[in-house]
Image (cartoon, rainbow, N blue to C red):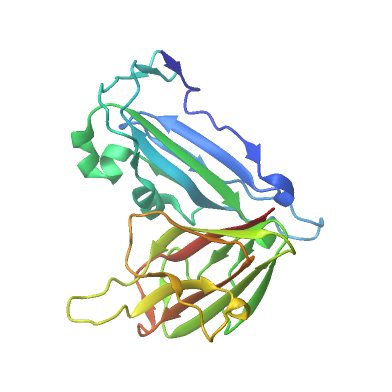
Length: 263
């Protein structure tokens, strides 16, 4: 039998960045409660800093060979199958990412999951705020990567602000690699009648590392891709571009990206 704490929050810390990381477990019909508390102000006269949810991992697993005990005499029945874990991060992002609190029920928020049978739902998320999140969207923003942080498009997670060109230049410390992971991408989907994405996210190696002009795109995406988008730069330099040609504001969440420098 696999024993899991009854919908308990498991707190951890990510290096010196002081980013709180929590986990939730439950059955497909469990109401998983995700919540981020406001951070204490740096000075008594300052207001508390609101923290928001960034979904790091979200999965459904039916591989467990025995029922899953969740406390209070509650179990999730096992589904004896060889299928690997299914990612459900897109559904959790739609419901929770960028909010302070949310309730996620797999069978309600992802109706197709009702055909999957019993199993375990697992969500791992960070509570991000203040200095760990860059919301500035200017023509050129230099980001010195000493440890880790997040990029968030203006309007996230409510709308994508149109007619903007954002460039985030990420530069890790000397001798560091740079890891970038797109946690949420929700932009206008390319229509069949369109030759290219109207709103698009691109990631390239830092221009300073190019031998002949501009580097090729490592990532070029729009819409809501289900695949995990991860980029590594051994040179420690990446340029992240978000170009939106939609007029005014478009009803899509936008972009949330995690970056980290490491040796």
